[in-house]
Image 1 (tube, helix red, strand yellow):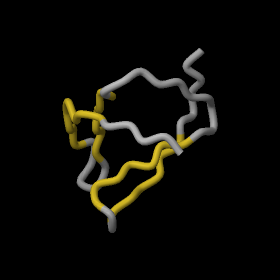
Image 2 (image 1 turned 180 degrees about the vertical axis):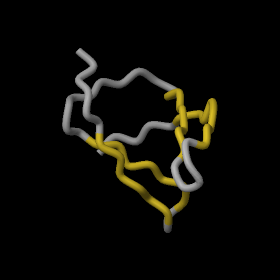
Image 3 (image 1 turned 120 degrees about the vertical axis):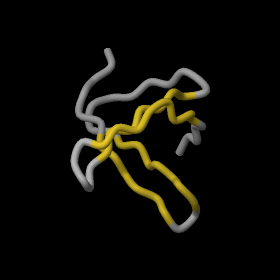
Image 4 (image 1 turned 60 degrees about the vertical axis):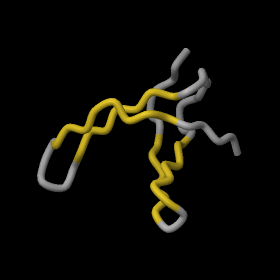
Amino acid sequence: MTTLSCKVTSVEAITDTVYRVRIVPDAAFSFRAGQYLMVVMDERDKRPFLNGLDAG
């Protein structure tokens, strides 16, 4: 698994419980449809997010 650091550039409330969080990676990376991103807030708070779009 590759570790990539990112910076949060914006947080937008979509509903009371759903937020759009925009992040910018510190380095370029590639991905394919179906892969997921594990977002780690701290060691006890890790959340997977699916990627539904192909970058290429």
